[in-house]
Amino acid sequence: MLRCENVTYTYPHQQTPAVRDLSLTVEPGELVLCTGASGCGKSTLIRLLNGLCPHYFSGTLQGRVLVNGAPTTEQTPPQIARQAGTLFQDPEQQFFALNVEDELSFALEWQGLGIETMRHAVAGAVRQFGLEKICRSSIHQLSEGQKQKVGLASLWTQRPQALVLDEPTANLDPESTAELALKLAHLKERGMAILVVDHRLYWLADVVDRVVVMREGRIEAEGDFAMLHDAELRRRFGLREARVPDARRTLPGCTSAHGLIQARNLTHAHKGRKPLYEGVNFDLPGGVTAIIGHNGAGKTTLARILAGLDQQQNGEILIRDQPCDAKQRMRHSGLVLQNADHQLHMRTVEQEVQTCLELAGQKDPDHARMLLEEFGLLQLAGRHPQSLSGGEKQRLVVACALAKRPSLLILDEPTSGLDGANMHRLAAAIERQAHQERSVLLITHDLELLAGMGRQALRLPLVGPRQIETPLTETPARRQSGNAPGITAQHNNPTAQVV
Image 1 (spheres, helix red, strand yellow):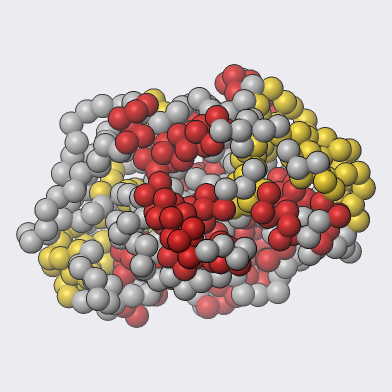
Image 2 (cartoon, rainbow, N blue to C red):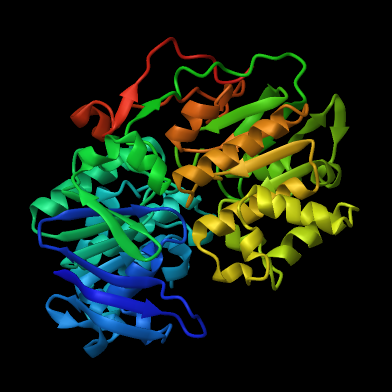
């Protein structure tokens, strides 16, 4: 169904091929995982399969890429999309409508299907992906994880013969990730060809048929999932762990009575919606604190309030026992948003970091280059930020946040798009911040990062005197399969959500 035959592809104005002599086949009823370090050519492989290379990006293509037996050079991207649906790393790049229902029906309407057919398909997608509460919401009001679900549901409505998924779990909570694994297993049984490109490995342990590992544009290793248990192989290719403990319930709660960051009687609601937080109090100590909760629980909203980008409706935020308004919090904090593209505005990588230093009152060019070297970006200093891979962009915005030496560093899903080697590099940088009497907040669904870095946790939804506590719930995926594939459970008594 999906086939590459001795493919070499070079982008315009580039000397080095992004993909070299690559051959790969994904048959109907087969699920293949493609992994490898950032910049190894995975995204280019996806663009070759969906026809964006060479139809949109032009460039030079040698060899053949076939979808359903026909060369992609003889089909248009819309024709390819009807047969092989693609979920991009950033689902916003493929949204056309303003609300969820319209987005789910957009492609069906474009294909000229009848109203009843569309209604039936959309209703089925809403049920399958648990979108009942947000199906009439604006796309722009959704969390990144909810957007990821909408993107997947939109593909599901079109019933393609193949799926190509780029980091499909990057913004999903572990329960939604387990449910996605079950859905992919079901689609595979129905004969769909599925290619998943991902750094996170554990969640596919029970459903993947074959694994391919890329490096420098080539497939360097191939086998079943068991080969990923080889620690030396993972180290050599910079891969993530194949099995990951679920540490969410074992992390102690934030019990400090005199935290570095304090919230008192915090209340906030999005316009026209019920409060996310109502009269809650919590204290965040120095060091590393994980903020965990399901998709849509309000983690990013809390980050924006603490960083001064949004104003709470009631209550106050204190930093080092001093009340701080939004402007003051903005000066004290550094925030890395979930979507790195929203924070990249300059013409070169080095200018991004240098501008952040200047805004913080620093003008040392050596400091900028030191930060770039720390995150493995020095060799990319002259590149345009939008030409970087997703993982490289993620590392760049973290370097920019560290440039101002903030008292409060907030990282919203900082490991999305990061391979194993760069995740460890990021973890080391976070540890250095924590040892300098700064507060680091990690908003993350990444169980691997939590297992290695979690010290204490603030669990969402936040609970105030007029709210009912909502614990981590059991999902259909957990009831059917116990733990998610590749997850090792850890049990102890749950801690209180907030002080």
